[in-house]
Image (cartoon, rainbow over all chains, first blue to last red; front, side, top):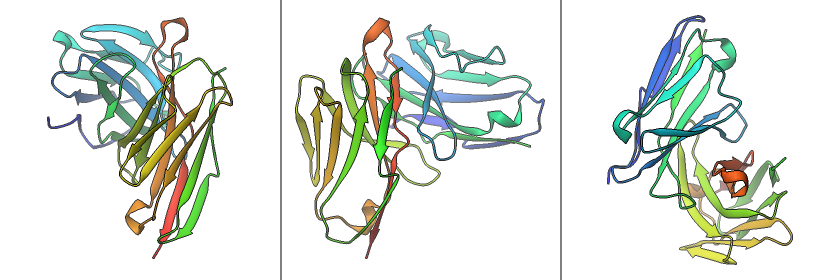
Length: 113
Length: 114
């Protein structure tokens, strides 16, 4: 069990560019979650997968955001046409089942200039 | 709207002191409540999870309690150490309408002074 990993750890991009983040969950966990955290705030839920199926999306997830989890393993979160307001820490978590402990990765810090 | 509140936003204590962090939630229909620790610029480390049917959970110097009727949870840290300095977040998992997303408070930033 190596924990949840996320790459890259830091990303600086210019406004209008597209970015993609990757999350590798704990190997036997079939639930995967994405959250966004801005400075001084708690994380906010973005989306949730059970295996490869995206079952829930927050209204925070605008049309510029898309998430996938092909084959129910790793997941990617893509942001198109980035805006300065997208600057945040993007956190990924996984769990073995619904309603049990969620384990978080180290996060990807995005800075949009 | 389901909300989680943590007061105070920041707390400073001398080393060795016992302390309590507070968390309140607006809807008693929670599935569970989880406490996390976050170091600056890092991800979240899970500390304790309390199921809605439980009253408390303990791990080492940490004890978390849950009172659904009053909408409150507390995290008790015994014999605080400088290494306990971090932001502590509580998060409620609500089970209504098939949603299983965690709702977080803004956290309490704890500083333990040597």
